[in-house]
Length: 324
Ligand code: NDP
Image (cartoon, rainbow, N blue to C red; front, side, top):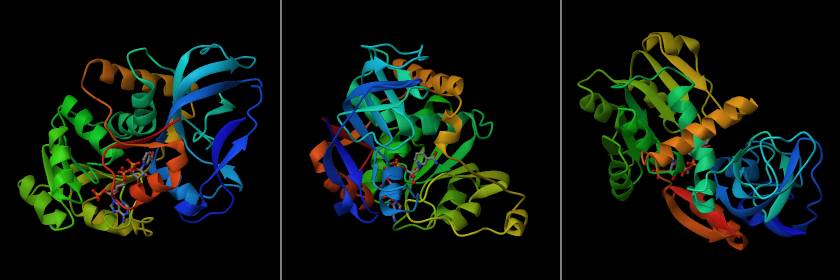
């Protein structure tokens, strides 16, 4: 039996329930993993609230690190006793142990602690694909990144600096802006007290940026289009403030032949070889010292409700993990 967080119906953080579940043995293509730490991500909020529907009841959580306890038939990249970490479907990572598909579980180098791995897999792999797999971003490119002091944000600040990319961040307090600057943002705008469109224009000599990376969604999408250079690229990847309203293609033409992508990490991870390659790239960045995990908050699994409240209440910085 393993302590596991589930929801029986969608709604607020109070709907998260800690229960005991049978774990069982892995079938073909599966592993059983005993977790040391789990990561908290905004997608967990969307699943809990019902924005991203799940068949209920369902366990929650998309990311964890731990030790492989058993492997099923056909699994060759992991064996019993290996350290491993993942960002993977299906939801169910908020638990002491589970059986799950092996393909997206990655061997974890000894140099990366379980806590750091649990904090960085989902958010770090997201930054990896945003910077390398959506649109060719070259050294010297200018990027506007919203919520730069969040989990994905602080990793993006470091990643951008290591690639010679000028990242202009936004964040909701001056303290968050300072954190983003300390982590490698070239500039950071407090978008609660400053209109970020003229601020970005001023910071780019009126030209605008090459790319916007926007995980905030509803509150920032439209204005972000006005921050782009002609032919610029809008990478929308989240809905922390709510889902983006439908956009007219003619608006994209009128604002300078803009491009828009709406990506999800799990499309990139679906291919086993690409997933393992992305993880190696992330671990190499960590080994070189270019990117470090930023664990801003740690909660025991039993305090999952409070952890969700703080994430949704914009009270967190960097990544949040759950310990077991
Ligand atoms: P964060 O740690 O960045 O938390 C969300 C942040 O969004 C808040 O701290 C807050 O920062 C900002 N925010 C702005 N408006 C609101 C609002 N109305 N309510 C709540 N927060 C708001 O979360 P994550 O790092 O886990 O994720 C960041 C975004 O990236 C999320 O939208 C997530 O869904 C998305 N994501 C998408 C992926 C993909 O592949 N599509 C993969 C991973 C993450 P501030 O106070 O500074 O404004």
